[in-house]
Image 1 (spheres, rainbow, N blue to C red):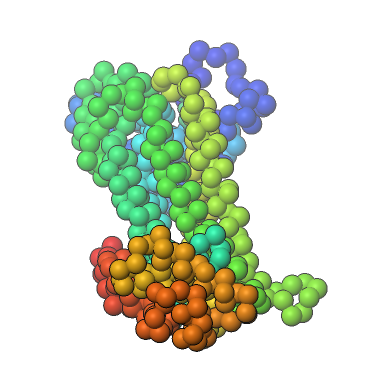
Image 2: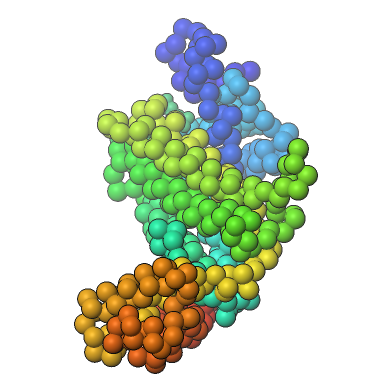
Length: 461
Ligand code: ARG
């Protein structure tokens, strides 16, 4: 039997076309257990307000429990005729308790305050799950850093060789970005931690129900201060979509480097067979599909954020049916990250790092030229002059197809009288790395310090 929550003033049921357009049960069914938790809390405030007797409350809670068992087992399923998960579950309750008792639960609540609350509950749980998955990825990055603590690599700007850095320093930079993403999720929760239950359709309830009690029952610190805002606000969803998009973008930046590093030209890392794919035609191929999917899916999550913001733009208060469009993009971002992050973490954890190859390329491309300039500054030469001299050294070497380290004493003196043979002390990758020893720098002791701090942070989460 079809149950509609709004049949009274209508002469007949909705057209098939309307029902098909209107239905959200195929995507909001994932909120079913949150809806049932909301129903329990609501039954208890109805009881406390004297609108449900002791026995009725007990029967109601037992009915909700029984329905939950059937929802979990799959014995109770929503049908297309159920407009949304709230309607489906109310039908389930009426089927179990009869229309008289089952029909009492609707008092003082609306799908508008229900959905605004359930959506928050769902996202708060998944924010915690995603934070755990991020911590796993950070741990994989930290482990790779720890396993290659003394490996130098070419540090790049504009994708060109810039200055030598430690591989650990580089890979921990990605872990630092992920720390801020995890922090964003925790910070987001402070604002999501408000329950709109009790806001009713928009104006609040006349039945003497206690929204604060429902909020506490559902794990929120507070109830909505404004029922109109409670039912109409979706900035919590948009902000969540932003954080997921940011995570996607941060992961895509690691992904892009993995894609480059696995090319023949770089040969910095090799992916484990279990985390790489082959080609249907080229037998030799080993492709970094996980990284490419990460890169691609970041675009999808950006789209989810943009789409949701476009839905919200200029929407008048309070609830409008447009708001039913809020869930699919955010659910999609949750699903995307929850399937992407474990695969990505596995790929990072199992990849083989070719430290010798990276180290061999670390001084290439005159990446020690800055060290020459800074050595000159330490000798009292103004930086403007030092920069000129170091640049002239590079040009001199380029013309002769030699490296800075190969310059003889005579050639150094020919380039500039400032270039004493002692400059060679900084013309090694080790010397260059060790000299950058301010906080956050690439000196091995600083990187080790950073690694310890980050590992402690991740372990504390
Ligand atoms: N399913 C709707 C949503 O997801 C909630 C129902 C509110 N419907 C209504 N006509 N007020 O937003």
